Image (cartoon, rainbow, N blue to C red):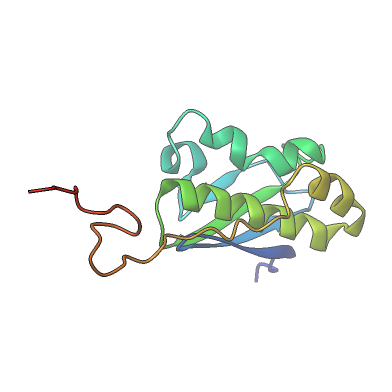
Length: 135
């Protein structure tokens, strides 16, 4: 029977997206990065997303040394990208507390709390008012 691999987990959230990130550090690690059972480049094909996602790995010099699996629910592309980045940074801190300073300095551990503002009555959107007409 195959033994389960040891992992470190971090949860990241942004807007309505929630990402559960697991990093695996063992001799079997090949540097794979899968998101919802797809390769990261297939799931996030936009140009700058891969740079944002791998930011915590690049800053801590862990790129290619860990296997990463991500399960994402909710939100859009931008929210999911930021949620994965936060979850990955939190997982790295659980692995090695000494990485906290580098990740904090580069802004990877700060949760972006901005969410969509609710629509107000009498307005078209949260703040956009109908066009004023004098007559």
